[in-house]
Length: 191
Length: 310
Image (cartoon, rainbow over all chains, first blue to last red; front, side, top):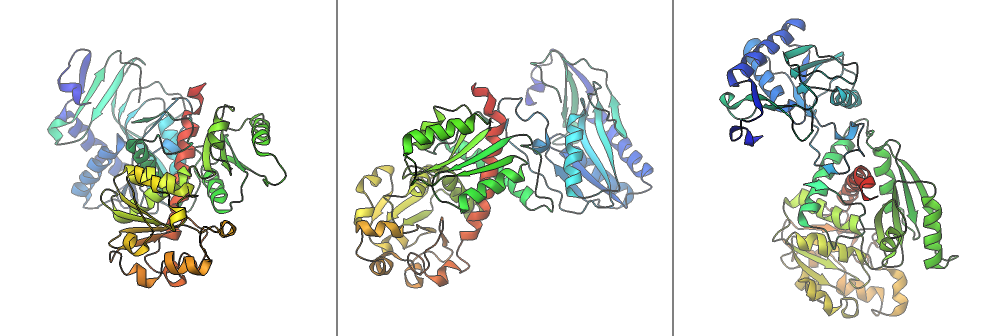
């Protein structure tokens, strides 16, 4: 994703740093509003893209509500439905949920909602950790093309896309460096 | 890095980067083992057959648990070597099992090269669980992983391996895993059991356990195979124990934070004294833990890439 600055051709900026910041602030407020505070909330970011987002939301909740909500992350490799499809294996990320999710309101956080298969896997993973009161989904970008009956509770931006496009999210480094780009006609990788 | 390997027959052709990849995957697997529900659906619908032509409870159980934690169907097939002529029956048996469409075959056999041989004749993935005196790759990887967990690195560590070096497949795999990651390896045992040619691997060869243990960070004790006693590689078990057994006196020469490892099963009082086997420096049970995680990692990696080869 570091190539972004070098090659602008075929790229469209959906959100710049300020835009991402504003969207995340709104998402955070919505999460707090819907849950009537942050008391029963825990955040779980989906590796890799959801992890930095969950950290930003955690910091914002702390500023707004003065509560440090437990935040973990989950890798869905072991719950994928396409294990043998890729033909090779890529490096697994870590799963770390060092708190009980029993009876908690779990906010699952990801960068891009696409087919919904990642979310399905992540929910299966969560259920292995306990029995949450409910699971809610927060995503920065919803790009459509769902293959499963899954919807997000909190959406940063709805972006109509074609399947041949790719949404690139970068929420690392300083807020000025954050971007969301739409790349056209990529080699064919989605979410 | 991407994983494209279809079989794990030995570590002789493993790059350090690949070993590191397996270890990293094993770390993720170890997290699964800390959960209340120690099972993930990754290998649902896959079949793992444990094909063991040699007695082994520990390794077989470890593979079995690893497979079940990943939701694979695990079938154990054990066969005594006594009633069968090896070569023919091995292939015959393997072909019969292959006809039942397993995804991964875990093989242990007393003949060196058995796993390689099978990999040329069956289409499913093969994991070598020990072939004769050749290799025991999962042991090599779990030893690497166990040491990394405790020491944080391998490069520069002095690692002494003591015992029947000549007949040990563990040593051959450890030489590849630990040696390639930059450990200084010392091989020690009775002269007839420590071939000089082993020096070609870059290891130091000695018959003086004190020399091997002095300043060591890790000491790996090998099981002295009691059945080999008949061949008179050494005069008696008592003599062996006195000269090559690890006891408190010899262990005191090692570094203060040295650790003791053993692939099991231990002959207590022969190669390892009772008190050392149970002391806080002993990593024997940590090795068993690492073993399940490393085997889960390999099963997972092979199941994902297995169809590419066809």
